[in-house]
Amino acid sequence: MEIKKISITSEESKSYHNIIGRFKALNLVDWIKAYIVSVLYTVVICAAFYFLVKESAIYMWLFVPVWCKIVMFLVLLLIAAIQRSGNKQIAQLLNKYFINDLKEELITGKIQLKKVKVVKDKILVYYRKDNLD
Image (tube, rainbow, N blue to C red; front, side):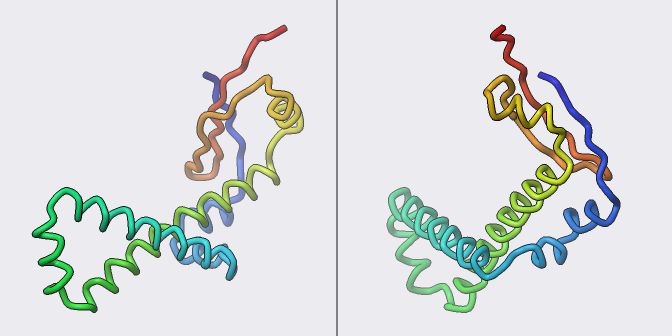
């Protein structure tokens, strides 16, 4: 596995690592998608909890206050929004700074992206190169 280090500006790094900067990166469509994902997370969590321990799930549904349920849903919504904005910001940074040679190799299938991380003022792109020549 090879690593490509790409330098970015400090403002872009701060925007990526700052929670408020992440929320500013989302538009209305992204917030709606994050809401849908958080609803799906809620349904899956509730269904799994119900199938594992029915009596406790029913007890919690009946006796936990509504405001607690709303707070838990909002936490899931914020987690989904942060995840979506991080993916969106990384995609924008890669489009801006990605080197053309790697882009062409990625399109032709000669390399496979494994992981992309933003660390301080750098983007670390982990990829595997296939030697099919």
